[in-house]
Picture (cartoon, rainbow, N blue to C red):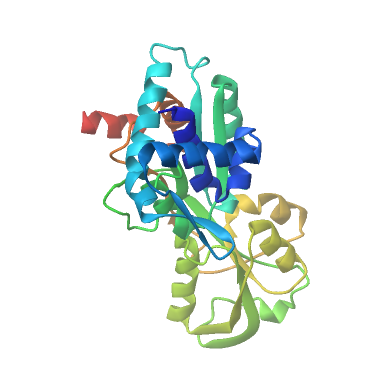
Length: 305
């Protein structure tokens, strides 16, 4: 059995289509189709079936996927045996919410690429509520997230650096509308958000409930940049990680509003699968994360040995 065919199967699952897998692997689409047909013939099972316009993994395909991943991990271990970090090959898949990716991950990604230039680094921005599942189903190796306080049994979680969040508004917001500390208010303004399940977003929602401050229905957007632009244009307010708006607060394009949560910190977390092999590139990522955002992977590793 050609392990390249197994790698193609995983690429299709991770990218969501034959075409995207072909692009990622630098294959012709016909090559991807041929590899899957060859694999189906060798295994005597159907791996994909057409559902509507999409090709979906069959139940048999889902059943064998853990074994396929294990084979590919074993091949990677053999290929990287006794290699220096600059020589190792393989893939490192990282996931994080949009705000963390944009404002915290850039130097981490650059350092990983510098120290392990032959590793295929795949980084995806995911909503916070999808990160644990990406670790469970194997589409990500490491997730960087805000700590929601609950994790699947197979997910290990390490505390990272805590961060503060702040309520922001447009400088054009009328001064008499900027009070968010006095209780029992009805305010004709919407909360603009892109991470409704993040711990800081739940924190501000609980705060408004406790203060009996009622807003207009939320406005949900796809990215932190869209949220910031909408607030700048006085379309509503937002509660965001402070690190994501430092520049705008400094230059006056956004205004910070006072709340009773101004001194509260929200913990960050690093998540990964408890039962999967920790590859050299994952070890490298943990070391860099330890240096950059205070993740104590060594303590966790020592406790499990």
